[in-house]
Length: 98
Image (cartoon, rainbow, N blue to C red):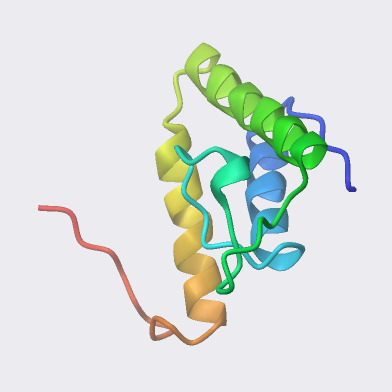
């Protein structure tokens, strides 16, 4: 399994992107990795992998909190870019906040 070191906003973005490209996940930052399953309800990760990825996710939250950044906003930006790439959103899609 790939290893990660969370020490910058770019390392967080790289981690989130890796979850899409390496594991083909629809990322939910608040879902434990043990809860990710395939369409056949088979776990995506074994216990050790899930625990490791949970640890990295906690590091993402902690780094963002220490640096006054919103981890969910970073995750959302990666998700929108990935969805555009996969054709789920049009290339010119802009998320509008009210």
